[in-house]
Image (cartoon, rainbow, N blue to C red; front, side, top):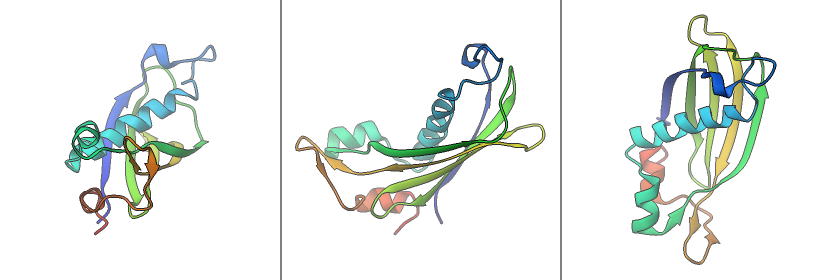
Length: 136
């Protein structure tokens, strides 16, 4: 079963733009908090993996759809779900208001495996990472 993770967050004042809604670039910060929570839950420490096995997993693609704005002090849930982990790590994200479940944003992202120090693109995600993310 593909890995999934949810985190509940609250919009801090410093994430707001002059219109008193979350500035669009801050959504990536929320998605990353869910992404790294998912990796941690799956037992994956990307920093240690880089040091021990010489692999990086850079994000190569993001696509966001803003549906409803988040505002001051909104409590929200950010969910990350792995949708692919064989040739790339693809994730789908959702942000919903914690109180009503109203959908505020969706995002998809892709990460690839890169071998260091040669910086060569790998055409397959390492087997232990695939398995930890639910893709045997």
